[in-house]
Image 1 (cartoon, rainbow, N blue to C red):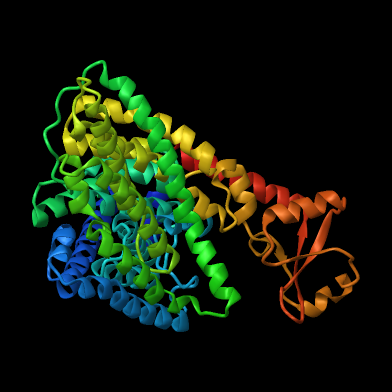
Image 2: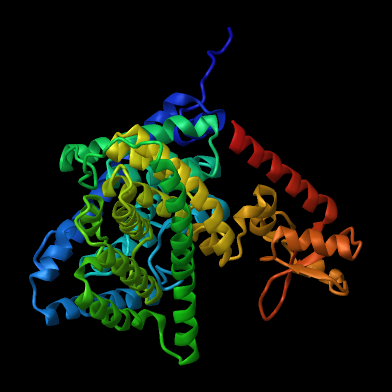
Length: 547
């Protein structure tokens, strides 16, 4: 009599991994909903933390920070970012001692991009949580930066924690990373389409079919959570836009050129300010965690000239969109906001660059529209050009022209304005990246040794470590006879150096040493294994980006 067939026990983690690897929709959609819920609520909690800090420091809602600060005594406005800087410095010191923030700064979008490229989609939850706390204190006390980038980092960190708990493979972790980013953007702007496209355009860098459904579902879920708790109104109060005429489109081209120049200045400021401040601090032996109070003095001094530069600047942006500011005042705000954001980022306050770029674009566009109105030309008016400028500067600076165009469309529901933004941002992006050398995010990544402009093939050479592909030598005494080899690799060398060394020296293989004082031999790497590992990584990357 035949024995009854026994089925293997059901293992949920094994089943889930198989679903990811085979791209089966139900598992992807379910995780997209899960991450959308968690990421949406994480973004709402982050916004609430900023609002709470703002009430404690300025006694006003953060979205009305300029009006609230204007009603306060000058000494209180000046001391607000200084006191916030002291708290941020204390938080950075704790994080530095605990090792929670390796670079003594809070995280943002560039860190999410780096996690996708070089860390298999992994961000530690401690990094995300502590970065959000630092940013909430920074922005709530008047730091001149954005909240969307840190919200993206928090959403991605939460998603990474989910993928870690579920033991997902790297490809699944990367898709969940994008889901968390999409949910955060959608919850912040109440713009689900733009949230999903931002995740594809900036975080993932591709539009693979397998990732579309979970990212889109996560973005919609994040937006629904935001609407359920904050209402259906967009992030900005958008004015009604007059219809554009054919004469407005030459003006749009001129605004695109102006936006390119401002974007290039802003990119260089946001990228180089942290480097310059760090170099000066290291030269004088000043710890990086102690920089925020000094930056708070600079922010406070600028706020005495114009409190409109404090915080994320939503109120001032809305006023510019409505045409409530004079031309000279708009141009002054462009200069002061650029300086204030450079100080905020350079002196280790937490914050992103999304809101400042929207702010600068709105001010520039409103000033440009006002100047056109002085000529007596029949135009669509100042609000139209403010909206176009907002999209052009932000899209060019962030390297996300499609996402910002869709954000404008979702905020305005105006087709003509969206077409004008697409024209202006296309021109501004090309010119700005030629002048600045790239977008803010890509230049920040480049400073960490990763050149995304060279394509996936180059990235793999910069991210795969020798320790991951070598043949280990468990018994180190067994490898002692290899000591006499002239050339060697180290276990933390990248694949690019390994292939270069083996080819240049015409070696079939070489020993791998541990990078330590002892320099013990830990493995061996052959040329065949190195090239095979590279070929496999290229095939996996191609499949990830196209299936």
